[in-house]
Image (cartoon, rainbow, N blue to C red; front, side, top):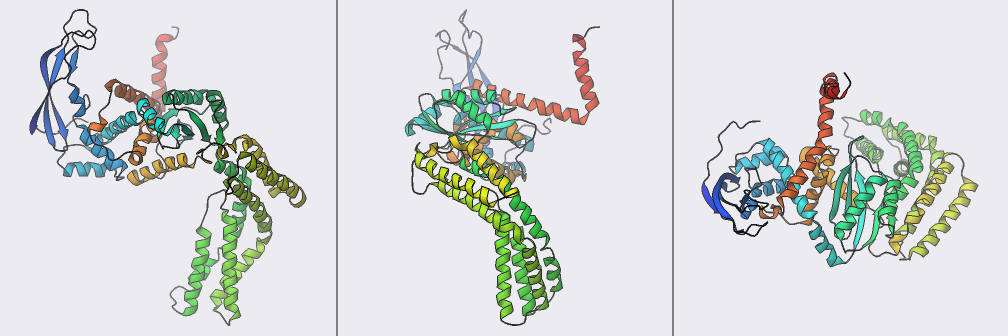
Length: 535
């Protein structure tokens, strides 16, 4: 959108002279031919920059006739921009440290007297992401940081908020918390992940990679075997137990659904005591609130079965009511509530004993993998092998039907993960899980929810995730950034990065055009191919 108001006038002038006298190509002395004047809007007001421009006039020089602008200009502003780097730093700090939305940031800048639009705030936030990612992902900085700790432990995982679109693949160093690489790929195949890992290995240089942790995705395992064949690959214990216990979780969820269906009459009991203030009504409402709280308390797999927890809590509520009944007469509504619970628990009683026993095997597996005695890999492997052998014998004797199939699935997933479960006990500081990387993804979603109100991660997190994820991580890894820190070391690197990010937007732009006008979009493709088709 075109500007509708005049640009503010400069309140002070700053002269910037070039420190570069000889030409970088031929060594001859350059000549100060003219001064370029531009107005830069900063937090302290508008500044008029008078930038010295030098030119090499030596015949045959590679830089002959090219304008060489003063170096200090890059500490003030980016090329073809009118807002200073301090404005970018302010916008980034408000977004990632204060979790403010773009309208809130725009209002703060207007309060400080900065003439800026909301759309410009969004664009400058993108520039901030790009500049911070260039700093954080610089190979020289990463090598200097990791050489002090002497080794690197990697975690790799992908984030896919949009089904059918790109996946944001992230490689993170576990000991320092540094994001080493973030790249959007069309898929997670071995052929695409292997070059990513090779790029990380080259970026680390002499720093040895002593271990990698990831989930059990087959393409990741194959890519690591190809790119880092000698590096121990630890498979995440959390993902292993979650995948292995998935059928048990489904059986628990089904049992919970059957139990909840039979407790729905609690609402009728609550309505019966509405408006009453006697002791019986208070007690009935209190018990009903406990039942409702138990019904709405869901837990995530694998080690927190919601159905079994609901069964225990409703059983405790029923026993409490029985203790009250033994003391004397009780209100009719409370007796009705007790009847509802008793019938519901009796109707589903057969579902729980086998399920509880099956979950005990899952919990015992988690205890062995937690390795509180501090055994080595061989010791943990022996303990888990003995447990699995006992599980096989017990399943054959005791279980049939759904639970037997669920435990058979548990054994099958254990065999699939087996080779990668025990490296963490022999390699120092190699984590058992990649939950820290998952936590970083959760931090990104939490940030977007705080700043924009989105519950799910936006598509932009994948399109611009290569720069946005490091920018979000910088809020935890670095102190508050100022304008000079954002100055790009090489302006060509920033321009190349910006071009690559713009290219990733093209497929989504085309998709929006197709959805807006499918027939016109397809006719445009046909017209574009007409010169290549035979007459």
